[in-house]
Length: 382
Image (tube, rainbow, N blue to C red):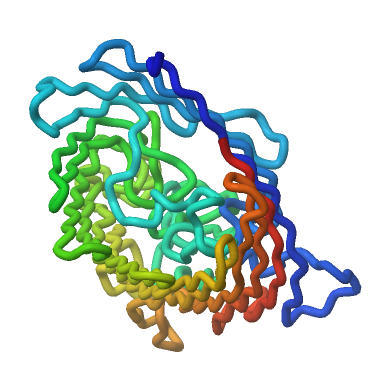
C-alpha cells in the first residue's frame, strides 16, 4: 500500500591499467592509488551491492535505511535516519540519524545509474596526504608525503601509516540533524553533524560539530545552480593533544565553499563544479607550515545521447593546492592531480546498463605519477 518501499543497486566494475611503473601483469593494479576509496577498495575494481528501504509509519514520520557491501565484505549501514514532516501543508522536513550529505551535488549521483562515467570526481574520492589522526610536525614532513594519500605517516599522533582523507567523502554519510525546505524554484538545506566534510563519523573524535548548508536554484527549465558551505573541526582529540594544541582544537578546522551547475536540453547534459577548501593544523616546529592549507578543484563533464539507450560522455577534473616553504624547496603541499575520462553507456533494459571508459590520471609526485585505465561496468537497479 505504499508504506514500505524496497530498492537495490548492484554494480560490477573491472579495469586494466598501465602506469609509469613497469609491470609484467597485463591488467596491473592501480599502483598510484588514483581510484582508491581507501587502501583496500578501488572504485574501478569493485562489486558493490546497495539495498534500500523506506517505511512510512505515518503521514508525518518515515524511516529510511541503506545497507552497502563492497567486494563481498561485511554489510555496513550507509544511511539510517528518520524523516519528520511537522506540517503537512508546508514543504519542510527534518532528518535525524545518519543523514544524506548536505554539501555538493555529486554525492547524490554516485550510484552506477546516475554517474555518467565509471570513475568518480576527484574531490569526492581521491585520497589526500592529510589525516585527522596524525599531523606533520613541520613543512618538510608534509612535503615528503606529497602524492602519498594512499598510505601517509607523520610523527605526531598515530604513527602508523594509514590512508589520508578526501576533500569530501562520497562513501560515508555523516550523523546528526538536517532540515530541508523548498519549492519548485528554490531549495535550502542545513545540517549539524558529528564529523567533517572529508571524515564523516558516527561517534565524534573531537568536541566540535560540523555546520553545513546548501542552496539550489532553478531559474530556467533545465538549469540547476547550487552553492554549498561547510566548516568543522577535523583533527582528532588525541592528535591535537599530541601536538600540544588540545585547548585550541576547535580552531583546527576544515572549511569549504562550493559552487555547481547543471544544464540539460535535448540530447545534451553539462555539469560543472568548483570547490575551495582550507585546513588549519597546529604549528609545532620549523620550518613552519604556511596556514591555512588550501585546495581548489574544478570539474566539467557532459553527456550526449546518440540514440535511445546509447550515450557518450566526457569529464575533466583537477585539484590544485596552496604552496608551503620547507628547508630546501617551496612547493604545493600536496601533489596536484588531473583526470580525463572518456566513455559512454548503453541501456540493455530500462534498469540494466553497461558502461565503458578510458581514464588518464597525472600528478608530479608519488609512487606512480601517470595512470591509464580502461574500465567496464555493469549496473542493475530496481
